[in-house]
Length: 248
Length: 194
Image (cartoon, rainbow over the protein chains, first blue to last red):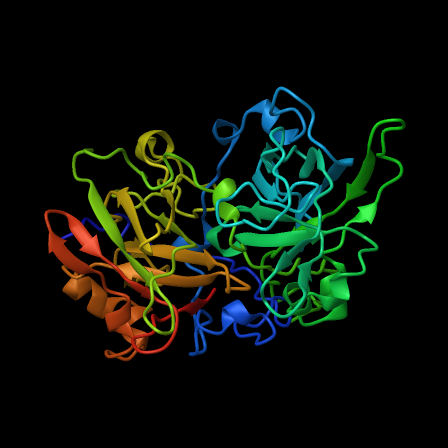
């Protein structure tokens, strides 16, 4: 099989993305039991950032309907629970906004139950809540959702294990390299120090970066509390002319 | 220059299927498209059991080598009609109850590495699953690209057994390719620090 090789002999310089160390959880984290048979045992091989890695899917408006950003209006009735506004910006580590990018979220309902057949714990489903949202960031990288404060829920990781309230977030950035799936937590939740998933993040500063802040300025009086949470994706590698870089 | 600290990864968890799969996710091109191939296989855990709650995502060049992306430094490769119209380049497929995924796509072109060398045709792959606190990243190469694979800067840096052999799909005939992803243990797929 011969494949056409366009632009063969082209030479060009690509500016790679930074590789933050000590930020993401290790692959194998025994307190999180599910990692035992799924985390790779061999160390990952360094992959240079070439054309496939510095590009990525630019998914936009065709993936989102305007109603997708309000998880409280997707059904005929209002969902049960505490209505909240969740907003923030998607940036890269150079402070550049990730403009017009897809943000996907999913979460449990107010009772801590997911609308998923594998979640059979005895808490009620809410006929007026699916728990799925999507939006596109604006030109400043800002996203926003209206949703219901998710409940804590039990899981079988260890005896009497409960996940703190959280919302799952999926982000693309501009490149394959920047792809990130993570979870946002709510402030003041006493379950957080007991949670092996949050605790898998190696540093206290890192764990704190997953916790949203109450944003009283964005709260809508008589209607909904607001929480803000910014998400930072990897930026480009520093050029030799830049100094003072941290986190390497 | 001060850098903002990066947001840590967290597991996709067991319930992503309520929100992440798209009906057209596995179809980078519609089934039946001229030249379409399928790539599929099992995602397997450390005791070779199928993983029924993984999400496989793929990203690749178009058959003409373009990505339709503004960061592509090749001036003639940024916005080919092929890439921007009919070819998304991105695939997303959750594994089924049997642990299998499958995508329908077109063969990517070989790519210039930037220094005169050439990368063999490949797809970049992310796997997300309960039990994975961060995604794992691998690449799919093609078995009938022997010369290109031998010259590929990434593949050629790996040992043959337990290295290159885990990244090369198996031809099943009729434009079908099999690529199993072994997360752990015997035959563990090579994963990349991206």
